Amino acid sequence: MQNSLLTVAQAASFIEAGSIMLIAGSPKALTALPRGRWIGGSTPYFMTGQGGLRDHEHVFCTIIEGAVDCRIGAIAPGELAQITAGRFDQGFSYVLVPAFSEAHQRFAIEAPDLPNLYQQPLVGWVTGVDLAEIGKVAPVAVNGMTGEVHGNAVLVMHAALADGLFAEADIINLFHQGTGDDISFPESGFAAESCTVNGVERNFAQYLREIHADTSLPLVSNYAGAMINVSFQEAQAEKVTFYAPVMAGLVYRLAAPVGDYPAAYGVYCAQQETGVGLSFNCILNYLYASLEGKTTGGFIGPVTFGEIAYILLNQTLVRLDVRSHASLVPQAA
Image (cartoon, rainbow, N blue to C red; front, side, top):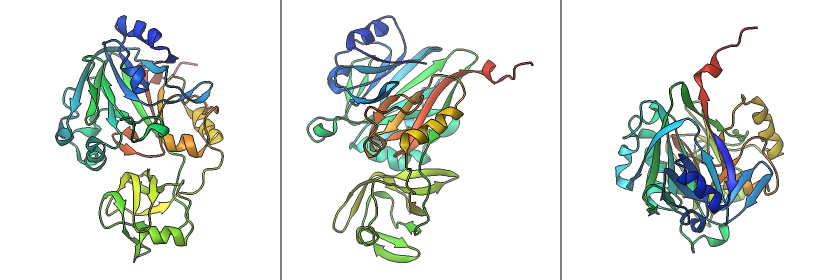
C-alpha cells in the first residue's frame, strides 16, 4: 500500500487516474474531492512518518496497490447482517462508521454475532471530527463513487485483490489487565450504573471514586483470548458512560499503565515483517500519550474515534497490510 498525506489537488489526481483509495480527512476536505473509486472518513488527526498532527486541509490517502476492483455500499443500522454481502472471493472489507450515530451503537453491540463476519478480513474505523467541533460538526463517511455523505450508516468498501495477494489484519493493544478487582456488568451497553466487584453488587461510579481510578486507562476483558478494551467517556455522579459497550457476562479489570507509548509501539513495529501497512490508532491514545509531534515507528494512518477489526475496539491500534503469498515462501540459503 502507498500511504501519503496529500493536498486535495494531489489526491484528486490519483482519484482521476482510477486508483482504488482509502481516504481520511476533515468533512470539508473530503467533500472537495472528485468522484472515483474511494471511500472516505472524517478526522483531522493523523499519525505520519514525521509525527502526529491535526490538519483540516490535507487528506491522508492510501492507494491499495494490487486492488483490481471494488464495490461500495451503505448499510442502514437495521440491516447490519448485509455488511458482508458483496464480498469478492479474494480481498477484504473496509468499513467506516460515523461516531455517535445509531449505526455506531448498533454495530458495537451486534457485530460479534453478524453472519460470515470472520471469513475474510474486515477492518476500519469510527469517523469523528475536531474535538473542538463535537456537537457542532457531524462525523461523516463519504462514498467516493456517488459523492453521497453518510452520517448514520456503515459505509463499506469490498476490495478485490489480484492473484497471489492477500490482506492481513493485526490488532496491537498496548493494554493488559491490571492486578485489581474483577468487575462485571448485568447488562450490555454504552453506560452502566450497577456492577459486580469481586461478586459484590456496587454502584460503578461510586466504586471508581473510592479507588481513585485513572479513567485514562480502559477496562480490559479477555475476549476469546484477545484483550479487548472499553474506554471511559465520563464518570457522572451515579452513571458511567463508555466509548464502546461493556458486555454482560464478561469479566473486566482496569488496565495496567503503559508508560512510554511511543517506545511501546516501537517494540511492536520492530517485530513487523517488511511491508507498508495502514494503521488506525485511537484518539484517546493520541491524547493521553500526547502523540502530537511524536512518531510511533512504522504505524501511520488516521487517528480514529474507535477502531474496527471485525468488532468495535477502543484505545487499540489496528493494522491492515496487503501481502504476496510469495513473501511467505522461505528463501533458499
